[in-house]
Image (tube, rainbow, N blue to C red; front, side, top):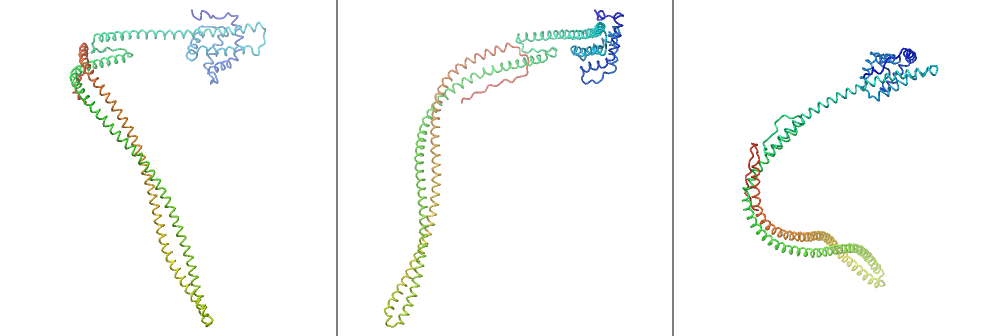
Amino acid sequence: MHIEDYIKTWPSQDQAAGESIHARVSKHLDAVLLEAYSAIDATLTAVPLDVLARERRKFRAITTGNFSPEYFSEQAVIAKNIAQFLTFPEYLLGYAGYASGLVAGLLKDTSWSRAKRDQEVRLLLRSVFSDVAVVMFHFFNEMNEKAEGEREAFNQAREAEARHDEEIVNEIGKALRALEDCQLSYRIDAELPQKAQQMKSNFNEATERLATAMSMIRDLSNTVGDTMEEISSATNDLSQRTEQQAAAVEETSAALAEINQTVRRTAEGAVHAKQVASEARADAARSGEIMSQAESAMAAIAHSSGEINQIVSVIDEIAFQTNLLALNAGVEAARAGDAGKGFAVVASEVRTLAQRSSDASKQIRSLIGASAEQVTKGVGLVSSTGEVLKAIVAKVSDIDSLITGISASAGEQSAALGEVTSAVGQMDKVIQQNAAMVEESSAATKGLRDRVRELAQLVEAFDLGAPAAQHRPQPQRLQAA
C-alpha cells in the first residue's frame, strides 16, 4: 500500500478549524522555520526564499488537511533531498523544534475555552505528524531502494567473483596435477582475473626456479659423483699429512718448553737487575745530596776567605801605622841625644816588627787569593759534579723503568708461552682426533657416492622441459692441505 492510502483529506468541519489554526500560526512560521533550520546548519542566518515558499505551501496544506496529489508529490521530492544530506535522527530532531515552535505560536497571545484549545492543538499535532509520516514513508522507501540496489550490485559482483574463482581453481587444479606428474615444464598460460595474476606469476616463477634447481641438482649430482674418487684420494693424502703434522707438533711442543724455561730465567734476571738498578738510583741520589752539601761548604769557605782577607787588610794597615809611629819615635830619640838611645833601639825593633807584620800580611793575602781561586774552581767542579750526578740519577731512573718494563714483558711472555704450549698440546689431541675422523670420512665418502647415484636416478624422473642452458660445474681437483 502507498502512503496516500493512509493519509486522507480532512472533512470540511476539520478543514474549517484548520483555516483558523493557519491564520493564527502562519505569522510565526518564518521565525519557527529559521530556528528549525538553524538547528541543522548553525551558519544559516535566513531561510532561502524558494525554501520559504515551499514550506509555506506545505504548512497551509497540512494545517487545513488538504493532502492533495500535489502535496504528496512535492513531499516525495523533499524527502529524497533530505535523505541525501541528513540522517533520519537528525531530521526528527530538527522537526521536533519545528513542531514545538508551531504549538508555541498557536498558544501565544490567544484566549479560548479549554475544549477549543484542545481541539485546535490536536488538529495541529495531527497535521504535523501526518507530514512526518509522509516524510518517513518516502525516507525509508528511498533507503530500501538504495539498499536493494546495493544488494543487487553485491549479488552481481559475488556471482562474477564466483565465476572468476572457479576459473582460478580449475587452472590451479591443472597446474597441481602437472606437478603431481613431475612435469616441471608446465606453466599457467591462461588469462586469469586480476586478483590471481600474482598467484599465476608466483607459480610460474616457482616452477621455473624448481626446474632450474632440479637441473642444477642433476648436474651437481653427476659432478659430485665424478669428484668422489678425488675426495677418496685426497682423504688418503690427508691421513698421511695428519701423521706428519702430529710429529711436527710434538717437536714444536718440546721446543716451546725449552723456550719457556729460557724466558722464565730471563724474567728472574730482569727482576734482579731491577733491584740493582733501584739500589744504584738510591746511591746516586745520596751522592747528589752529598755533593750539594759539599757545594754549600765550599761556598762557606769562600765566604770565610773573604772575611780573612778583610782582617789581613786591617793588620796591614796597623803595621803601616806602627811603622810610621816607629819612624817618628826614632826621629824624636835622635833629638833627645844620649837619653833617647834606648828608646831609639826600641823604636827600631818596633819598626822591624811592623815590617815583618806587613810582609806576613802580604804573604797571607797572596795565600788567601790563591786559596780563593782554588775554592772558586772547587765550587765550579762541585756544581758540575752535582749536575752530572743529577743526570746519572735521571738515567738510572730511566734504566730502572726500562728494566721494570723488561721484567713485566718477560713475565707476560712466559705466561703467553705457557698458553701456547697448552694450545699446542690441544692441537696434538685435535690432530689425533682428525686422524680418526679421516678414516671415518673415507668410509662416509663411499656411502655418499651411493646416495648421489640414487639422487641422480630420482631427478631423471622429472620432466624439466628445455630451460635455459646451465653450465655444468667442472670437478675441482682437491689439494691436500
